[in-house]
Length: 359
Ligand SMILES: *Cc1c(COP(=O)(O)O)cnc(C)c1O
Image 1 (cartoon, rainbow, N blue to C red):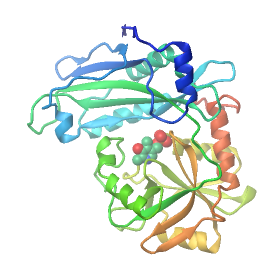
Image 2: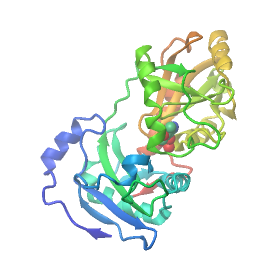
Image 3: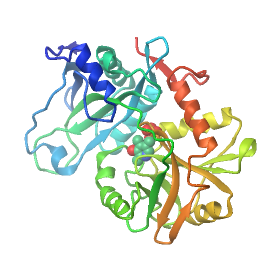
């Protein structure tokens, strides 16, 4: 990889002050990675360069037809001060799957890994120290062929940036959700399984509707029968049936329209490790309403890289409002959250070999 260091890199005191501010996506590290692809020459050698604005022709394809994909992953500080990534190869594979769906070039897993490891190593001083904090890493790819003709691009640019992420989890606050029956996120054959900006662009009007209803997030139901629960905003959903050791931890199964979350997949294993039964099933909004009303569903939570695990309290829809349990974060939700965070921060045994050292 070609390396051009940033002559204006922040000094240690400034950097530490910015990292200590917490928050999410407010400050970016000193460097970024840039890698060009063309149909003719394939992938060029990636370059680590100073973080900064990029210049593109106004007729660049991505501005007009939205051919873009991204990933979200994290680097965590370990007790000995070293840094580890959580299941980075899963992000690399999903990035390639998203590329395939959006007619973008598939980046080889090893090239993806090299870019992530090089940036994290270079900007390691930006990885926070406290539990619940991390360096959030955002790989993305845009179509860069210039011209207004609608066609799969023959040029693409891969970029990689990183931002310190604070611990924004407030255990006293469960998320409230608006179950959208007006809009759909994804249909069979669409882009629901791909991590692409277009999915988000089409979802924001529903997010606005959720805010208007006083809710924090949108829950999507399936496009065809309009009754099966799919996922929440940018996170997957989990439902806990029963209490204590006999509880079952349930998540909507991957039907082709849900984003296959790496946190979702990890929790399927963590829940078994903790002694719970797990199920991947179709769950309807009627099951949700009846389950929380008769007390069978005791806890609901959402999961994803950014927030890891977030309890879901109240659900609102055109059919009424339902509260999960007492509306507070449940014990199994918190146990799974703490276990997963423990693995990520190196304080709980990593028996599935999920952590990957940045050397
Ligand atoms: C990224 C994302 C998720 C969560 O995936 P993780 O790999 O767990 O971060 C869930 N839903 C959508 C729509 C997403 O974009």
